[in-house]
Length: 252
Image 1 (cartoon, rainbow, N blue to C red):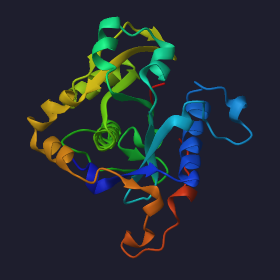
Image 2: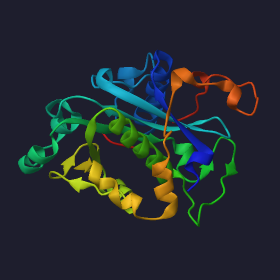
Image 3: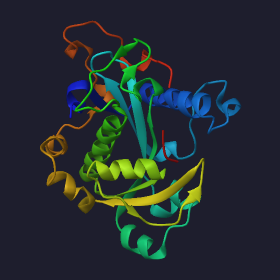
Image 4: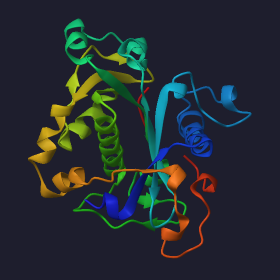
């Protein structure tokens, strides 16, 4: 597991970093997948919606190339106002059990296409394989999920909801995180299922492989964009993160 050697996660806590988040989303959801109507956002090329005002936005950056790799948002609203409540039917039993206390929905979870096959297409340089794997895709997702967990624990959040494709749910479970399905599938830009993750759902991580356990025991899982320090990059003079844009997966 090389996530922390290769990548870093930022909480977008400034207007410019949120704008960057919306720009990357435009590239993924409007230009690449067409899941959102491109013409609706064409003038500013920023993909955003009504949930963003009550969300915490995260970005992932490659420490070596200084490219942006992916991102997500945590929609932070009462359960009945989360996107998952809008798009699908949650089991009443699950809703009663899981929607206690403060909850968030992991949403707009994406990895840029250049980084989905273990290769930076802009540089043309193949990345070194990790234990025979050819893709860093799910490692980036795991780093984002870890940041979502850490942010939640620091802010009194005890449950995380996901509305994801079955393949992504299976991949997250293989990583050692137990997702609990809490409703029937729904056709929302493809077949998706609602899942719940509670604090206890991470227990398998801490009793499993050393590399995963150590990764999740790391205290500094993300940093604030407003505290970005360019000088730490080996003394190189670099452009602040908001300017570095390249071409740009997923939940609601």
